[in-house]
Length: 240
Image (tube, rainbow, N blue to C red; front, side):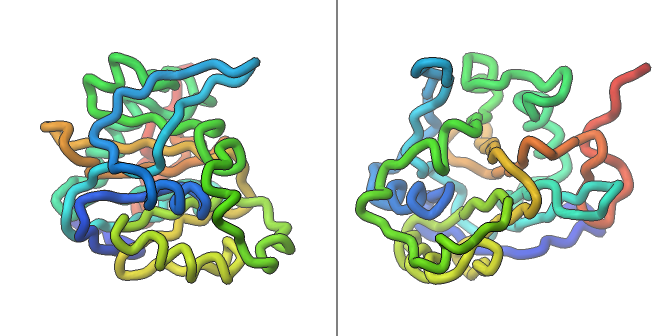
């Protein structure tokens, strides 16, 4: 690990695969066949461009570290990053942002899955790909009534070892999003006062398994976002 960089949480992947997304997405991913490095491409429905995902992926076995990424002006959580313990987190984030960063920033790379993202081993997940916009498994998975009363504007996404996914989701669904806790086999990533979730998976050199995951929102500004305890932002500002 990069010197002086301490994770906020760590969890263990034993099954060689992860499920991800909101609770119903994870539930779907736990039931669907496991995807290797995907060759998904964008599809258009009306005015919406999206990718159809199965909300699971092969993943490096072992300990994963989870880091909060902080807005350097407000000191609030602006994004989350998780990666296998063998991965240099700072180098990996820089690579992902070079390949496919925030669509709200200039020179962000590709904003959809294409040949360039595939060549770099990055899987792009955009706002219309998951959560409210993909309702698969929502008819077989009901969240408890408490969540209906959750009026907080926030982005929340889970990252769970597939072998424990349904067990973990069954516990998470009894709490509103802001009160869900990470565990030994899962990370709950919560960004308050934010909308529109975006994700980026980084894969190993062989493209056999994911080794990292970046979560950010419409409000994340990477030129003023840094690892907790770091002063330098993840991206340099544009020259005047």
